[in-house]
Length: 460
Image (cartoon, rainbow, N blue to C red; front, side):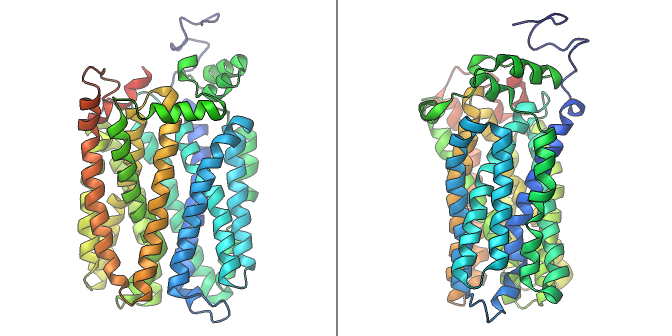
């Protein structure tokens, strides 16, 4: 379909802006803000856990603390499943807003909780909101990303998670000692007051979703405004439960079935690392003999490394391929975890934690970047949703496992568990390009872009 003043649906003219970072910056900035608050909410628990364990009125034990960390991840799993239905009904933008509202309410419940059960219910509620947010934000950003910059755009978006983690640590260090851990969770209500009005006013709806809902006029208008190619029916995600089931079945076509399973395994391992460390790092370092303030500060340092890692990994992945970078980053994470098992001098420990943060979080994010290159446009949202959804099982398993080890006085063994997860994740993601080629010997360069820096050419 063409319109006056254009030479085709995918070509910018004087009436349609060029598709660059500049034209899509509002979408990236708003999704960045939403994921920032996601990272803040996830990391708040780890930042204040030592204070909560020291609060006799709450009655939290290491074992129950680990279980509660898993409840958050289970909430994320159910939230990711529910997001598909809600997106069909409301669209991606309102679903993002609803996700922010839910995890803000969950933080309020945690602030009011008088026992571990009610606190766990608050974390479960927050998890429901968090579960739908990341895959929706990733799908939005990948849809709006400039050509040739898919991995870099993904890295830029997910840098916000670690900025949020640093903010959570700073709030925990500043508020918890004087005002108590509850004040930190009250700060977790801020997303509903700050992000929701901005998302409602400025975030556009997905052109693909608009087209799937039959609104061709609005879909073309949004695409033209942001310099995107106008969506075609094959790019639009199928609506309704039958459409989503068909999209999930498509992930197991012969050309992608093995790649799908490997992506799920890599995501599981990646989120074992991300959520296990985000929840337990301060307490694990405290058990290793470091002071309380230093142990909490380590969480800020590892998230600072995560921000740097997103930029480094995004640029490297656009050049060498996200699968290669993700595999290397997983392996380096395993090495960092083994180093942290030893009680090193404080300065060396800070350096190791910072460098581990550089590779740890971006290893998982590059799994999402690889996912975006494996599937066709109409299957990408379903592929991302399933990769993040299955990964949530790792997000539940990691905190639970370290909680079990902590209850037996063996929580430092968690570093060995993290190293094993890193090695398994490296093997899984490294095999994805091979599995994709074997499944589809005649695929095009766009379909095998996971092996090289041409990833974003799939939109060309």
